[in-house]
Amino acid sequence: MTCSISFGWFQVTEIAWIFSHKVNVGTRFGSETIQDFFMKNTTVLRLQAPWPTVKERMKENDSSLTDEDLEYTTGKEEELIQRLQKIMHRSREQVIAYIESISSNEHLAG
Image 1 (spheres, rainbow, N blue to C red):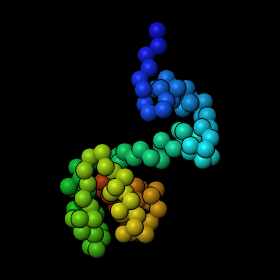
Image 2 (cartoon, helix red, strand yellow; image 1 turned 30 degrees about the vertical axis):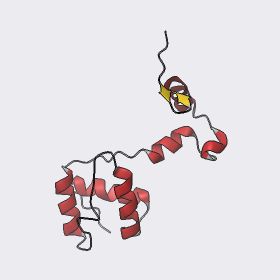
Image 3 (cartoon, rainbow, N blue to C red; image 1 turned 90 degrees about the vertical axis):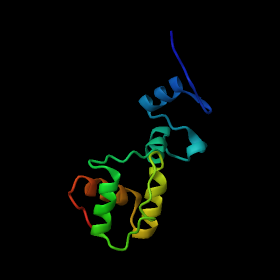
Image 4 (cartoon, one colour; image 1 turned 45 degrees about the vertical axis):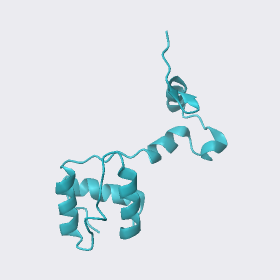
């Protein structure tokens, strides 16, 4: 017996098959595979310290960052990353690496 849950226009069983086969879904995602699309658009920050600690470390490392710049709500990682991309003039990947590095106290600056 197969259990499937509706996920918008796909079923979970279909998504699992697509992920396992890296099927290109065509124009809906351009030339990306659905796996690439979901990996880019679902961000989970791997923090080694609580966010208030990470936030303070980031402000110590870059005095131009404010509390408003670093406002973060669980589940809204993408908003934080996009805001920091604009402020820091860095790529998405660089911002994520910076946050995760600061959280583990490696201080990847710059």
